[in-house]
Length: 354
Image (cartoon, rainbow, N blue to C red; front, side, top):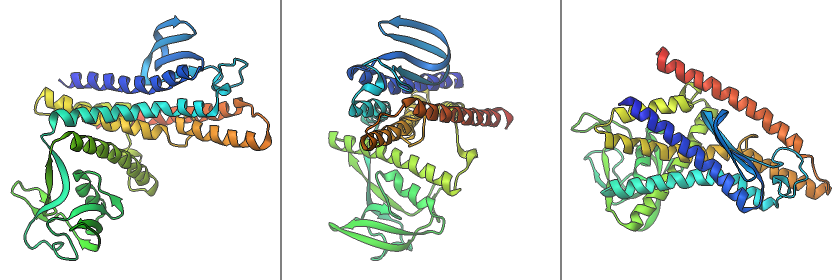
């Protein structure tokens, strides 16, 4: 059964790559920019077909893809070259890949919530275990809607436990809405020291659920996807602060392994597929955010370079040679591929080496 989930994960990865590159492809064609090649995956081609000005290809290594536009990393006299398009068109083309990934994640979550959620989890406290240290006028009360914890907004019910778990000292600054008024609750003691009837450690309070409706489904879907964006930011912050390390990072091999394992451990194939789709909604949002980071070779880096170049050309009234930007992106692409190879080796070692 695990083979099924591995194949499903590879298929879904291919879909995420395809929709990302299609975003670039579609907006380039719409903007009149010549697309020389549209490729799914990297490496040697196992299938290719020339149609008009564009070569369509399926390649062997499932780690990415590309939409190669005329004049993208160098000079070109072609009036339909990428560098000759208006700046606003180039910005749209560069951002379109991440936009498609975000929309894909949004659509997956909307479908999952629409067809599987009987109720929508809320953020209003409905029950507090007696004698909890945080239950007071200066702490939580029944009826409080939790807005933020330690400065981080609470988008969905699951954020409450996640944000409380991030601070080990057990004291938190909460923002709640009580009787229509926003209150700041400082230094509230909250710890996982209450054991429920199943033997699980809890904080000792419960929150509400709402009936499913079009409005509640759309709102929860949007908040869930914005929460995914925040999780990417928190993950990057943890890497830079040392809270997380290289050992906590995963590439395609590691992600496929985790996805396949979670699917295989599900109660049934149907539930397994739903769990896999939920993970890939997060991965789609993750790809959207990561591709917009201001790092050369990524879409975000290209956007920054485009804006900087436009500003320099505006001031100096001289057109810069795009080949130098091409060198920058090519150099960072080599570094990124080397880093991906390192992470892939780590993932393989962890899977097979224990």
